[in-house]
Length: 104
Image 1 (cartoon, one colour):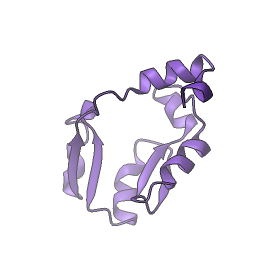
Image 2: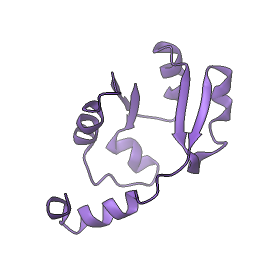
Image 3: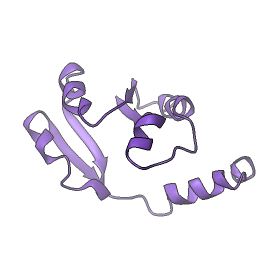
């Protein structure tokens, strides 16, 4: 299961989605290792999602290290290191410049 932040939630976090939520959800849902994609609409739903979907592991990027340790009360918490050569900032720059299709 993967939770994807909605465009509205990203705005509340001070982020701008350059790829709309529905498209991001469709891309992630297409991965063979993903059984379910859910919309993340607020900070508070993490615990209820873990409990409702009986998640045993919560995974977040290493840039969030320590920020979700309180979830260990409900499941294992794992922080992953960044992937070399992959940058959401680069993707946003390319998409924002209108070059997304040429870069793909």
